[in-house]
Amino acid sequence: MNRLIKFLKRPETWLVVGLLVVAGLAHGWNMTGYPYIENDEATYISRGWQFITTGQLDVYTYRYDHAPLGWITIGAWLWLTGGTDNLFGSFVTSGRVFMLIIHLSSCVLLYAVTKRLTHGSKAAGFGAVLIFSLSPLGIYFQRRILLDNLMTFWVLLSLWWASRPAHQLHHYIWSAVFLGIAVLTKLNAIFFLPAFWYLIWKKADPGHRLHALLYWTFVVGAMILVFFLYAALKGELLPAPRDASGQPLHVSMVETFQLQLGRGDFAWPWQARSSFRLNLNTWALKDPFILLGGAIGLIGLTAMAIWRRRRYPYLIVLAVACWLYLLFLARGKIVIDLYIVPYIPLLAATIASFWVVLGQELWPRRWRWFRRVHLAAGFILLLLTLSVLGAKPYTVSETSNQQAALDWVQTHIPTSAHIVADNYVYPYFVQQRAYQHVSYFFTAEYDPEVRQTYDDDWRNIEYLILTHEIVSQIKAGTTPKMKLILITPNWSPILRLVPQVSSIYRIIFRPMATGLKFIGLRVAMRSSSKIPGHISKTITLLVMAK
Image 1 (cartoon, rainbow, N blue to C red):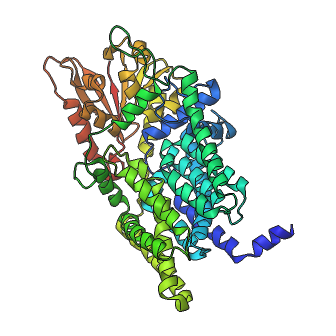
Image 2: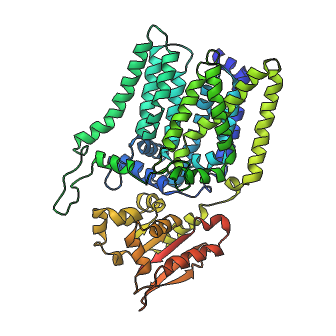
Image 3: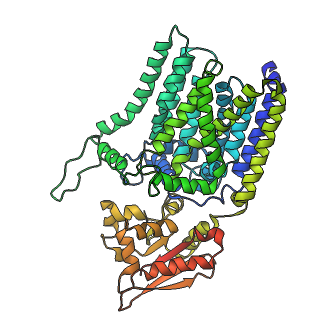
């Protein structure tokens, strides 16, 4: 009890509580309305609940595209909050509440880790959490149900254990366990390994430094090895033999990794056509300040960590972690926009740490005055961000159109209908409702077992729930069967506004003698201009193929 009273009397306790209030409001306000429900969110929810209810790692064939611990964690959360009769309503809403909890937990860890790496600076921890929580780029991704958010939490927890002041061997063992969990949540966490090695080597007592490093590496490696052992025991580790038609007889982890590593054409990161450069432009539109500030902070912090390495021996850990993950992003192959997620807290910590250390070194006698400048700069940055990027995350609903589509389908379409849809509808219809034949659009295109459900003939697909994601895939040529629904000469699309829901457009196909060549897509894209700009990106089209 006395410890609790002392803890509550500490000013730092209330500083952290204040930060959590700010982070909770910034993250939680309108979190179910913005951003729109993305494919990956529904995929992880579906896989997680499938594991809880059946023990299977995927609703279809598990292909080792990700390690499974992340969605198993999400599935456990759904079970704890009531399962199909969820405390928060839909699985997606429940998942976003879980992301709020994960974000707040990550804020506490980020504060503690940044403070330790900067030789006990509360100002650095304060600045890191403030930037992390108020970044529009962070809000856009941290609200979503992504494995990357879970992975970020486990990496920060591992750093918290590895950076503890006491030099005890079991601290490093716990650090290894949590980094192993991070890797089994999202494999990208493996790129932080060298930063941890350096931290443990510098942090551990010289008497057991080598033991600490070896134990830590063994535990992390043993946990990662479980993933490969699982594939080996199932006979799915090595490349699969082929049948007479050249198709593999089963999935293979090695072949999936080869496919993942080979995705996209190589391009140097500074080339305009590179995936990194394209995504960098997209990230900059959402939040140019954290990217520009992070770039300046990373260069400055690296120089400061080398110059003042005796006074700040652990700053280099933060710099190394940032450079390593930047190398991963800029490696020249495909980069997905959500890969930026674990980099956001690192950039936030880098900016705050560099600013604080710079002030302590250049104006040590005026540090109190500089701290006030530090706080003022943070609030000015916040105001600039809000003024430039607007209040969209707090006022706009990008999910109302998606929810309206779900409600309309449930009211008007029988549960026995064959529906191909964007992934976001799957947990709602199949796992929380009684719909029997709902398939992911990509799986309906390529999975042989799913194709058998409609006799491998697109004409047996009764409904196509179309979103901007499916449109982009059709335009890219990756879903030819979905394309056939829209361009076959004997079918003509007629655009009709669904009267019950003003933002849903219904395309009814009727026989016609002449070819169309993407008339359906053109109609769909033109219709978005009639909708308010804030929901045009998430326009949902219901295509009736019969």
